[in-house]
Image 1 (cartoon, rainbow, N blue to C red):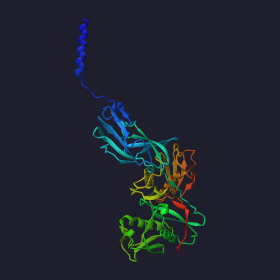
Image 2 (image 1 turned 30 degrees about the vertical axis):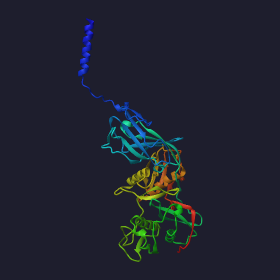
Image 3 (image 1 turned 120 degrees about the vertical axis):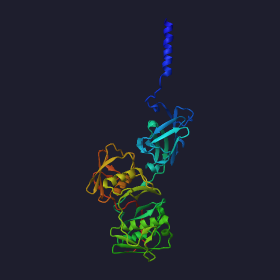
Image 4 (image 1 turned 180 degrees about the vertical axis):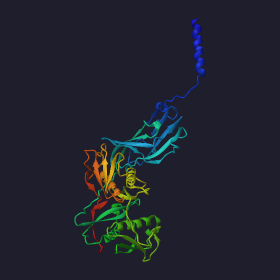
Length: 452
């Protein structure tokens, strides 16, 4: 009897298993998939997703890195944030920066933040690991790169980099060197970015500032790795608050669309930066023309205010210099919204300017009268940053915020009792923009040819 019962039970089990419907479990199967970062060829294993660097894992002064995620099976991936990868930066002292959005050079397209990964459709992306893009000092670092993909959120690869191409930032000056007078005017770097620089001229106390700038545009500035963006001038005079500039029409700088715009803005910004100058007026070979310098209207005198600018570092030779970029998409914004947009630019850079503020620096702020009161969060650590880079961050904020109408200064507070100074700037005092930005104080100019 007992053998009959056993046979019956066995038949029942076979019947039930053969007819039972199969339902997918709600378990996230991605957690059971092995992910390798050792670069082995594992494309024939259907249970493995591979995340690797196609460029290698150790570099000196790299520019970019090619990353690949591939799978011989099929899996839908979900992008958890707008940027595909994040980077943590470490050195021998520990964490330097965390959660940096990798600067993308190229990548695949996620449709509605989804991507079907299979053997024919890997994710191949190129990210920047250029030293300048992340404002890192010279040194050896480990970059931990993590996909911002939900199914791969706990996976990463490590890349070792050595950076040797850092530049120096020299802080602005209020007081010129002894027996000199400072002037600020605009030159261009090798990328044709227009930027203000300050020179110091010996024994020039009695000379009008506009004459000193006129003289500056006759000098060669290649020693600074900068170039004069203006062309030939027939004459320049100042009368009743207006600087009159008659340019030489045959100079190709003024007829070339690639150079004429910089020439126009160099003249306007440099001379309108003088306190007693109210307008600039152009003529061409003694003729009044309506349109020149590309498409600029010059039929009447020009008034200009250098407002709503974000000051970001660019490279010139061995130095970082701050350039004033137009704050884009600022129409209709109030003061707070402009400050927020400026900070976003400072942390991410723009198409030409580099980041001036590490992404792990966080602060709140209040607007008190004409000053922005900045309160750094208690967990902010500035130990990994040199004084010159902190000065660059501070001056990026000072010049940017004070370019907003109604703002003329910043005030630094901190929730961290260990932070009393940021670079050469002290907390607890009102800070105004200094007169001489991007100074070249080691090159004192002897005045030649300028007159009162």
